[in-house]
Length: 262
Image (tube, rainbow, N blue to C red; front, side, top):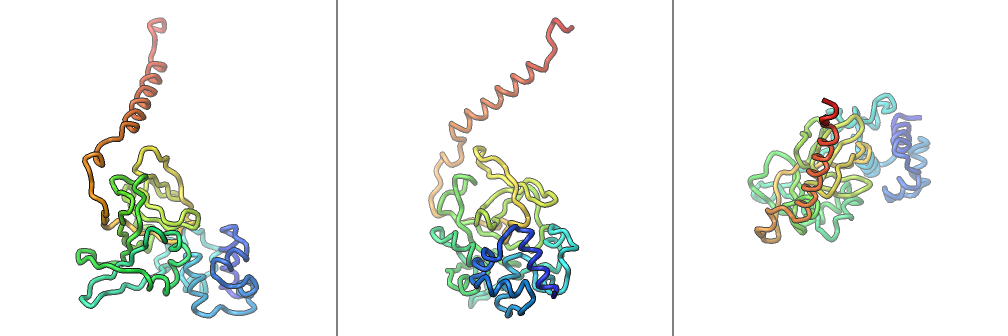
């Protein structure tokens, strides 16, 4: 079998996906995809490009390196494993920033690797954003204050995990969640620990194998006016903080020596 057929079979099994699921996601028949894994036929370049973006592994690695010998985390960190996005410019030479609409945000999960879908998106240009590829994503104001619903986060495309920094915020495109905007807390061996800035949401881990794209916060666009309340603690959040403080005091009292023990 060819390296390509072995690699795509290996990657699919690592994700625990069936051939039918992968074929459906690639919008081809299961029989056609099975022939690629069985090395009965080679995919044309447009399908190979879709497979590359689907598994988040560059075409060069897919066809030339036995991925079974390299841990998945190391594959994602390899300098050559880059799925480059074309940087489009307007007639003034400024970057075109594609806008993912709020109502169609879930459609991005299926269309992020489709040139026709990306070409259909509306664009804006911001002269102060240069030196990279940028895209605008809808924000969930409930989890990441002070960003409001209907706001947009403009992210800069991250090609390598080594370029990420803890404490910074990122837009993640994952197979399980779609678009999510979170703060990076920790980089683990096989996962990223992230959290919302809203204290009501607990931190959680995103598996590296689940990540399709990463975009670092570069700017934001608000579509609603801010009020004073947007920059004040919610009463419920204050109550929660007081409750946590009471619990900590109770624990300290429980651990402190009594007069009987002196």
